[in-house]
Image (tube, rainbow, N blue to C red; front, top):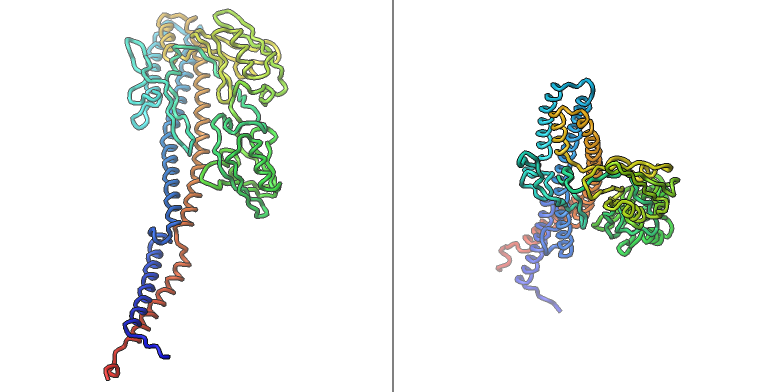
Amino acid sequence: MAIRISDNYLSKILLGDLNRSLGNLLKLQRQAGTMRRVNDFAEDPRAVGAIQRYNALIANNEQYLRNLTRSSIMIESADTALQDISSLLAEVRELALRESSAVATTQSRQTAVIQVDNLINRMLDILNTTVEGNYIFGGTRTDVPPFVRNAGTIIYQGNEGQIITAVGPGAVQVVNITGDVFMGSMSAALTGSVDLAPRLSAGTFLTDLNLGQGWDPGVITIRDGNNNSWNVNLSAAVTLDDVMNAINTTTGGAVTAGLNASGTGLQLSGTGPLQVSEAGDGQTASSLGIAGISEADEFNGRDIRAWLQPGVALTDIAALDGSLPLGAIEIEVDGVFTTVDFSGAATLGDLQSILAAAMPGFQLRLDASGLSVVSSSTETFYIRNAGAPNTASLLGIEGTGTPARMFGILEDLRNALDSDDPQAIRGSLVEVEALEQMVQSLLIKIGGRQQDFEWIETVLMQRDTQLRSKLSLERDADVAKVSSELAAAEMSYQSSLLVTSRLFQANLMMYL
């Protein structure tokens, strides 16, 4: 049975085929022009959702980097200012030593009065340092000068507020140093100088890691030298033991996790090189100190020790190894000596209780990785070793505790010079040296923040690279593949045009 195909039907088929070829050609031309595989929702709805998500994550990451950049400028400015203050205090100490010596004269001390006035003005300028119009030592009150003259004295009109910046998902950093630390109108303090952060243990809570900054739960990827790869889900982990068990179980023992010999971080062992990276968009591996690649069969993570808490056992602190039990310290206040015996202490909380009982009004403060002794009065106090072992030195609290009267001591020194009082000039040296020690402690704190920011910047840059790589896989076109398909589509379209033109060629025989 013969089937007759009408010209109208045939033309519809051919034109439809031409339109499909043309549509495919235009799609490939747009991909070649934009170098993107997905240019609208219709092309790949699933990929569009992933692309939007990656774009949002990249935008957030870029904002974290901008926050980091602005905060780094403030920290660098504070570091410069503190170094200037340290240099200025060295000049003050030199001046006080010179003018309290036997070679000083009344005339030289009168000249030194002018020098001290100049030093006070310089100190005022340094502490009123601004960054982009914001005063860096005013706490959160950055719109007014923190230190101003009022009725012949200098007062602090800032506040104690901390400026906090977001530097990652759920991660924040303190940026500023408040100017009230230079005034000392409420108490006297002695800042510790020894790192007492405890060794890690299997039971260490993950929220206590990184000196109390915690960690970022999520999934990590581990690869070994045999090209094996494992995704280890740590979202439900609570302690370091949970992390180590999850790694050992997931890898089937091919990679084993434990604590390093010093108890400061994690250590992975397996066939090297071992590589640990983020499997998701978080910072799990980085926060555990194991992001990176090893050159051998062992991967040693960075220091992620926990912060100081009352329950920390003294036996868990590496700095005290071989020196337990502790001995006694001697505290002098206004010529009165008190011995504080720490021999019965087993934890940091015990140290706090013993000091509070022996010295009412005194507090042993637990900082992130060290101790500080704070008095409720502005009386200068002295802490010394009292027999073996050298307990005050071991705990980092040997020295002089004073109110940080930055301008007060300069005014006292000026008055002593003006009164031609060598003894008073010499007496100011104790507080000047204590101020130098305090500024050095602040410089160490700022230096630690700068290191943290450098590490965070590295993590964010790595995260940016990973996110852009994943975005590229979803959005960008394969140049070689698109070029090949485009050439084939052009040939197909030209062939379709040729066939169609030949089938519909009109001639005289069609009308006979």
